[in-house]
Structure formats: C-alpha cells, structure tokens
Length: 397
View (tube, rainbow, N blue to C red):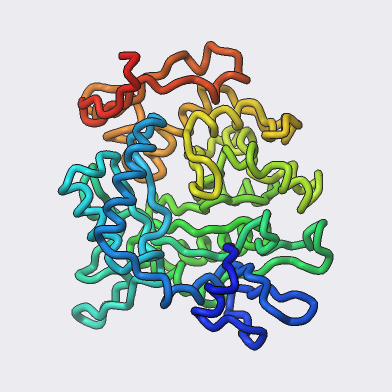
C-alpha cells in the first residue's frame, strides 16, 4: 500500500466517486472522501501520471542499490517483479551491467501482466515473453527467474486473504489481488509453459488456494523439479506445511519481518495465528529448504538482520515472537546461501565455497556461529567479493 497527498490525488483524479478496482481499495473517510491510502491494485491509479521511469533513472537507481548491497555482503539478489516502474526494466539491468554500475548478480522475476499467449507451430501455444523466453534465460550475471503472480495483500495492511477475520478489524478477511479463476489460469498456463512460478501469498486462505492451483497444474502437466515458490507463505498451519512438502513447493519467508513487523502481526492476527506466521523451524524439521529473503523495501534488507531474527525470534521491541521456531546460526546462514541458490536453480554454481563455484563471498568481522546470538545483527562487513574481485572494502582490510 502507499499513501499520497491531495496534490497527487488531484493529478490522477482520485475523488469520492472513484470506485475500488478489482484486487484493491481506495480508502475513504466517514464522509466518503479519499484519505490518500491506496491498497494493493489501487496503487495502479498513479501509473499514468508517475510512470514509466526512464532507463537512465533506473540505471542510476541500480547503481545506488549495488553500493548498498555490496556494503551488506550481498553478492546475488532477486528482483521480485520486473515491470512495476517501466516496460524497459530488463533493458535497464542490461545497461547497468554494461556500464559496470551493477556487479551484484540478479535473478529477475517477470510480472505475469507483462507476458502473453504466443501461437506456435502445429497449434501449440506458449505463455511467456517474446520468442519463448522463460525461466533460465541468461547467464550467471543476469538471469530470467520465475513468473511473478500476486494472489493477495499483506498482514500488516489487513489485505491478506484470510480464513478468519483480522483481530483488529472484525469482518475483514482480506481479498485476492485477482479473481480466483484468473489466478488458476495463470498458474496452470505458466506451469505448462515451463516457468518456475513465484506466487505472492500471505494469508492462510491464499496459501491454501495457491497450493490447490499448483496441485491442479502438476496433475495437468507432469514436470519434474519445477521448484515452484510461494513468496511469503505467511500464515500457515501444520496441514499447509505438510502440503508444501508433498508438492515440492519452496516457501520463501522473510526472516527480518520477525523483527520489524512482528508486533504488527501479533496485534492483527492474535497469538494463535502468530504461532504459525512466518515459521522457520517447522519447515526445516520437515526437510523443506527455506531461502533467505527480505522483501526490501518493506523492511531493511541486510542478510545479517534476517539471520539475527531467525535465530533469536525477538521483535525489535525486545519481545518474544515465536521461540519454538528458533533455528541455529548455521541453519540461518544456509538459508541465505545454499538454500537461496537452490530456490533459483543455481546451487551448482553458487551458495557454498567449493572448487568450481563462483568466487562470491562476504568477509565478516566475526563468526555468526560463535558470537552471542544477540550480537549477530551488529557484525560488521569488512569486504565483499564477486567473481574473485574485491568490490567492497570498508578500509579495515
């Protein structure tokens, strides 16, 4: 969601008569006047006035992000939806690499809105980018990753699709960001066209429905090792986790949500559902690999912050989150390394320090497995190396 001022609403003609778009909400006060809060797809009302961004603007933004990532020890990142700000975002990535302004390796998720049905020979059809481009196209510097689909909203914004209402808003069970039949169609077509799928789902109703769609797609077209993902997989329960395991789906929880958003989760959904909100241990106990993820810019993105929260299970207020879901520092490091590489089909070239793999690593000021767990977030990054080249040096080395 976002909040805009009265000038922005005037520019895009948001008034008391503006209806809610499908999968979104224009918040209005008791007089029926818009407050400026735009939830989910309602944010698209701003698009014509404020987008697209130019290629040069995007290259400058990527260069700025690259500096921050290197200072945090990040060597690879995933962009969770190409097509938000411009129809030339992929071009901007290529240009940033050409100008050596982007060194961090990138996997680009492609928004489902940007792909199309393509007619092929002999009556065949393909759902994807022009010329049949799909997951896996590219190289170790820049690669096309999953097809990105949004199924619902967020827990903190009370827009996630829930089985039961939010504690702070009786009667509100959230909503789907697109029609359920549309979601099912996208998932089945994407699966049958060879895409890895990454579907945003936070609420338990959304998670269950996306698993239904994945199961239907797999029955329609047999594929081995599809590694479909659920981005967030926020509110679950043991039955949902067992289905994730049975279907070979990769849940992608955000570890630092525990610190920054944990108090909001507890307030909005209560203790019973918080127990199964962004779990960590429950996945690992079932041998389900969980990648490390930030969902930046929703929360801060430094990996050590996420590792810290997964290990300590404390909110930033110092209160317990879900102590039963604590994992060890070694397990949390694996989430941000080999499990993340596995989630993008790259475990053979990155994710661990081995002969033959890419020479990408961070130099830490202390061993996360040896320090007091409450100090993990404060460990300094002394250097970051990509492909054997030291690209970040904090002057201590």
